[in-house]
Image 1: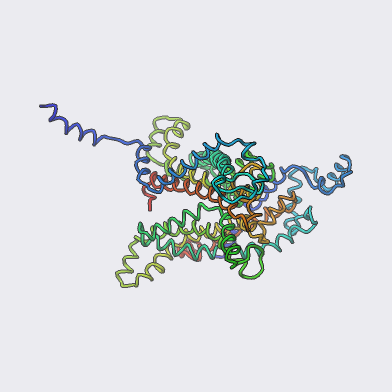
Image 2: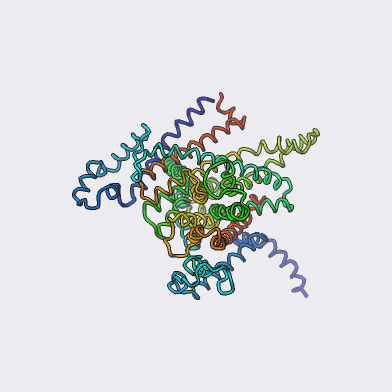
Length: 300
Length: 309
């Protein structure tokens, strides 16, 4: 019987010392957020539909080939979202167009994350002259209205998917830089950083072991929200004719095509816009959920 | 106070110089130049080169930049490649339209956002709060060029209430103002809500209630006034952003503002017009944001006290 008697103590002991890692803790909070779960479900549906679209549609045959016999058909079983002025199936084009929105959103975010948070972390950690130089340059870029900056960049380098990613990514660099610096500043004065210094750790060791992991939370939240914002900005640039060149089915470009037919064929502007809104909404929901999960203090 | 304002204005100068340098540099990277546009088709490459030399296009970047900035100080930003009109004049003839639209947009935004944010904060975690949060999320997630098109479909094509384009009469500004205001309303609403939540648990509100001040006065006078700083900040930056962000709304509604001017200029490769518009708009936006900064000093006695000594 001694074994059984010992059991309760054992459980109590493991309970008391059970530690959750940061990510487990965040996931536990995150799961509770209904909005974030809804966001994940919507995003997975949209993403998987786009991936399926990749396989069933052929770019030359279904996406860009003009078919004048079927032009401007209203939504039906054959063409769930109708056809456009060249007789192309809008449903197929929207599914295929997802690749542009998602790739621009993610790549632009990675660009601004890499440049912005590196600068911000360096500025926050080293301080002094370095910080001053970095932050003043950031101020300059931040004071150029972001849409205009993106327009100027696409105008200077010409229209292509790569330029679009770069332009949309660059305009968010100041935001990352500021958030990263602020996050590092709260960490840099902590005792464990001082202890690491005292123990003789080198700067790069402190940066990678202590500073970066502990200031990541707000940066990750910003990453999510920036993907959503980048999708909107990129489709806006395509809408103005400065983004992904036609005839590629980018959502913003499709919206712009639909403008000419808005009086009689309003579905042409309806569906691409819905695609943008639903995707961006899902990502924003996830971002909000992440923010609440990572920093319970911020939860309101 | 005056010293503070002048000091802030002086601090703006280096930022403006740096901003114009960045914009000038980016646009300068664009391929092709005026000679390709204006030279006759049968001009030989030597003739074109001579023309470039005469126009000073072959000078080093920094020389051209200084020449450009000298022009800016005199109000001379060159002439459009397309219609030979003075860039400075065209810009300032279009600017009032954009400013009117920006003001109308921010008006719509504040009228929607501040009450929603306050209600959301007071009735936290109730259905009212949920509605205001959903509105905020939708507003953030909806590209305003799409919202503009939807409004056109419903209110001008189906119902025929407002014109779908142009800038004649008061009714033509309604749809563009709603379009531009909704996105901003979302941001202002979220800021109002969180700022109010911060204030709402303060002791002085309890004191006010204990003294028998009516709840309405407690919320709008004691709470909202103290929650105003972040709200005004967002409003100010949004006003600055909408100078550039109006590009989409102006395109959708064919509104003859600065944003349209930039897009048209880019599509016709009108480099002096693009450079001029970008630099002037950026300067204006920075100036607006500075004005908001200065306005804090008037709203918040604590900030004023720091500078009046």
